[in-house]
Image 1 (cartoon, rainbow, N blue to C red):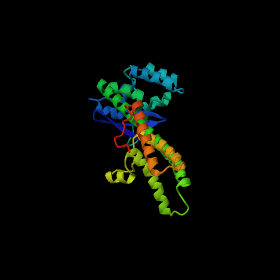
Image 2 (tube, rainbow, N blue to C red; image 1 turned 45 degrees about the horizontal axis):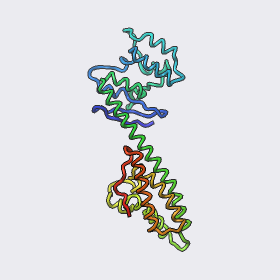
Image 3 (cartoon, helix red, strand yellow; image 1 turned 30 degrees about the vertical axis):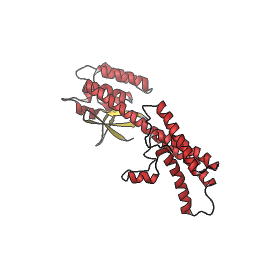
Image 4 (tube, rainbow, N blue to C red; image 1 turned 90 degrees about the horizontal axis):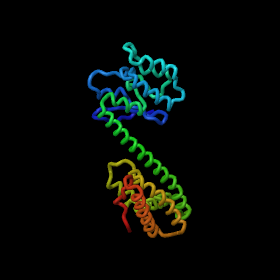
Length: 275
């Protein structure tokens, strides 16, 4: 479980993932509220309890409805007050979590946290939802990029096996063998990115990783396809120069298709050259 942050109207708000769900820190959200206001004030409200009860009934099969009914029956009374810890212990709720320690606080499932945002202000809730939606899109794109990168790595073995079986001869030294593999990798780099790994590194001396780590999602997808295709061309004993032209055609064609199918997600790279 790792804690991250988003910024909503200048307020840093922590959130974390648990069981593939997102929980947002209500304690941090309170920093955006003018005047004294406590989470216990929100939790003792009848509308709040009814909303949490409905949410728990949908998502929590172990929710203690008997204890919850007792708690809700006291909502609105002047002497009624309940902490998050007590509420969770008595009802077995999963919508709220109270974390102790230096980086602790009260966290709520995003569905509940969004409703809590209304207690800060309607404007705050709107910006909270907007920022969290942006975050989810970003996380999805990162997951998709990682998946495409892993696919390219798996196809890399198909590519290297074809090189080993068809281009590596027993008389080559270790340095010569490494050079062959590097040259074939750069055939793909030039066909797709328009430059070798070394040329990219010279142009980007401060960047971490390599040219493929800097690739877009669609470039990685095309790269995986190109590795398999180049393995076939190598087995057909096509010359490197001819393969470079063929692979560049594949890169241009597939990138164009991807940009047409997903215009918002895929932008056709300008560094893919035509030979």
